[in-house]
Structure formats: structure tokens, C-alpha cells
Image 1 (cartoon, helix red, strand yellow):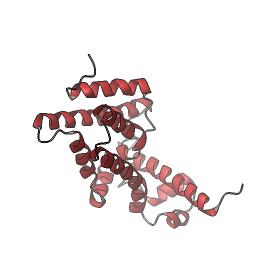
Image 2 (cartoon, helix red, strand yellow; image 1 turned 180 degrees about the vertical axis):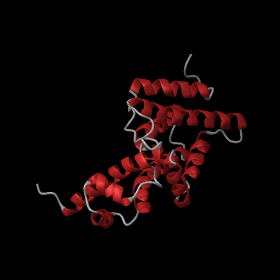
Image 3 (spheres, one colour; image 1 turned 90 degrees about the vertical axis):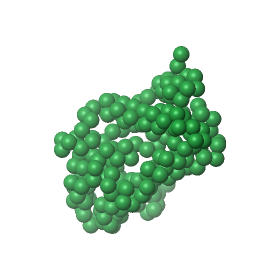
Image 4 (spheres, one colour; image 1 turned 180 degrees about the horizontal axis):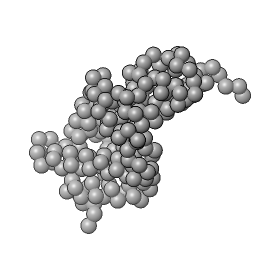
Length: 203
């Protein structure tokens, strides 16, 4: 079956975004140029500009799908769809499988500043924390911050260890592929997180 023009354009955009992720990781968002991305992909700058008019549009293309996944999770959590264990497992799976592009970008000062100018990702983080916090209990709020922050840090560290150099040649965080945590390992993390919340878990 012949491929459609639309599917070819979608494939090209995906390849451009993948190349942009690599270039941003190697040179930093501020240090990367549209020329660098076009050369990495082997296309002309005109070909790149046909799909993305600016570096900011490329960043949008990377960030929007990630934030939508986080938004969907926050909506479901606020609606009370998850018992605590399922909440923690869904959150862990989201960080490992659903938002890999966001992590190296947030570790890059230039990208982080550009993201904050255009979005409010911290608001999503606050919504997710609030959904797991039991009302006005300050101790519970601190435990939730500790546990969710610990999960994020553990996943980022594991990804970099699993995929070689943590930093590219210019001192910026290197691109990292999906973490290789098994289902059993993820359950161990969930058990530890439950213990951190004071709800059982590890003996």
C-alpha cells in the first residue's frame, strides 16, 4: 500500500524532532542552531523551515505531547481514579516511558528558561502532588514531595547510567533513551515509595 503524503510529512516531523533532541542534548538549547539540526538530519535549512519555522517551534513540538500526558495523569489523579499504589505505579511509568524527552531539556538552563516562558509545567507538578496529599496535613505533603521527587531523580540517574555518558562533549546533559527498569524493579520502587509515605511497602 502506498504511503500518503500526510504520513510521510508526519514521519519527517518525527525524524526532525528526534534529531533536535540529540542536537539540543549535545550543544544545549541555546547553543544549538537550525543549521545544526538540518545537517544532523541531512536536509536543507529550507526543508527544515518548511516543517518548523523556528527553534521555539521545535521545542513546542517536543514539549506539547509530554505535557499533555502529564495533564491527563493529573486530571485522572484529581478525579480520584487511582488508589495510592496505582497512583505511584502510574506516575513511575509516566516518568520512565511517557516523558523521556522532557528530562534532558529540563536539565538544560536555556531550554528550561524557554519552557517556563511558554508553559507552566510546575503547575502540573503541583497538581500531581496535591492529588496524593491528604488535605492540609503538612507531614503528608512533605512525604509526597520527597517520594515523587525521589522517583524523578532515581529514573533520571538510572537512564544516564544505563546509556553511557551523562554529559555530552559540551557539558550539556546527553540524550538518554528509555530506562531499562523491569516490571519487578518498578514494583520494588513502588514498595519503597509506599514505605516513604508511611503506607507499608518494604519490610
